[in-house]
Length: 112
Image (cartoon, rainbow, N blue to C red; front, side, top):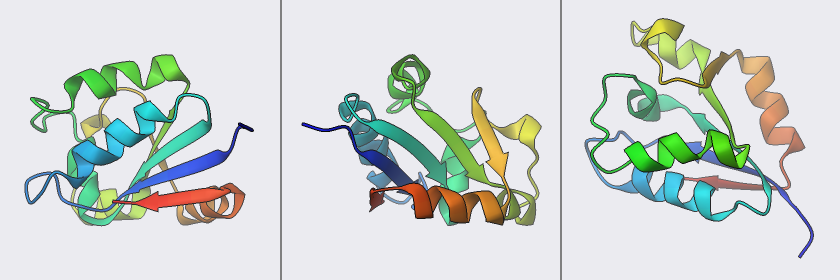
């Protein structure tokens, strides 16, 4: 199978359902593809360093080893009163232009 550039978009709040868990599980399962993860909207809460990691800790540890890039929508992050210092290790805040580029360059996008 040819490698596809895939974008996993996490918009679900981590404390309302398991979508964020399924998104990370999907990202890890796509190891043979070029995968990026971006947290947007309510999903930014799952990218915070102090968020509950009881379900997602192992995935978040493994994603960098799988060369999966981690991004957070900077505007949403700041609108909710957080900074880059509040994020999990490896997650990079990106501006709206970079978010647009992530979507445009993806061959497939999965929204959770």
